[in-house]
Length: 161
Length: 292
Image (cartoon, rainbow over all chains, first blue to last red; front, side, top):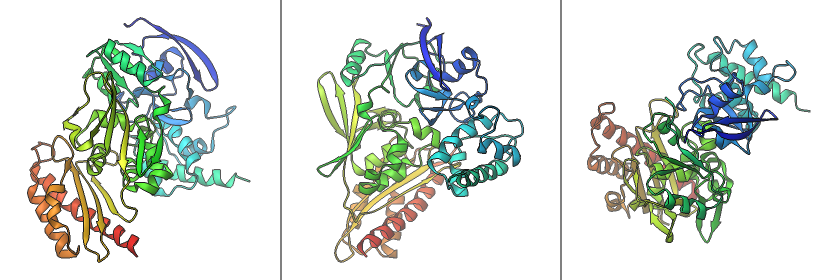
């Protein structure tokens, strides 16, 4: 039953093939089989949000999915967010507002909010804090993360024609 | 810890699911959103030999209104329920409650079928379906059957689902358009399971007297509790401050929470009274606004 299953995963626009046990979590396959270690594993039981990726454009905790389940879906990880070395508005804001220290929680936060800000481009601080509650940070106390998200939202609105 | 080994199946129809459940009788578990089940598998609290992934049953991800009934497919995600215009129009109480489940990322994957099948005593959807006495439709070898929510939740994590069955949809009789409603939840942190949660639905008559009243509460016992037998005595009166206060006292006195070292019974009873007070006021305010 632990015999590897051959699966094809569409990650960041590329197709990868891997032979993995059905019981191997998506988070572990991304990191170990595909070498995409930007997705971090914190609690491994869906509480901390560090492992958040996008599944078909929607945030999902990759420690709560088996890699085999992701076949036929589009996976987006943190590695795809900066384009040609250029930080996204959210990444840039986190950098400018000192919204990270150790950076462990950061990819999960970026993935959550890259999706959320596309759904709600004008969040209130309360809405940002509500969505952020699914990502635990041990370093920053969240203050600068909230400021960065609000700043990024403003920048993203300003960029619209 | 990592999950124990299993054989993975991804059926594409309800019939295939039913066949697999029959074939692997007792050794198979269904995975939908996986937000509750996957941690259990990782902790090895559950070790099914076969995992049946139902995420390909996309026809079960649906919301529609037919003849005064809101029908929601079992695979419908919490986020969709929380934001769907049909749910907001016909049963805003459900949308509100669904929007408080876990966190944003969890709501993208978690499903109503999964939540009801999991039957956590403090969860929102078991509470709301109990309040509304929704019909939970199951498919099995012998076809489909519908179980009313108030007979569905048998205990903590225990439901009326028989071996070989899968939830396919939930049917809710749409409340009156001018019904007052409210949902109140208290937890230590945003996104935690409720310590206590309360839901209220009420209808005021022409003269402003309370014509219909439904109240349900989660976090008191191993299943959500409908308080209708207690609250019926309060019908036919004007819902003034004295009425509200009496009702909260009567309801509060009737609660016998299981003891729990983290959240003692006395604390939960007090919390329940506070939430009931807020919930009644809020539901009445909505009812009065829709009459105006």
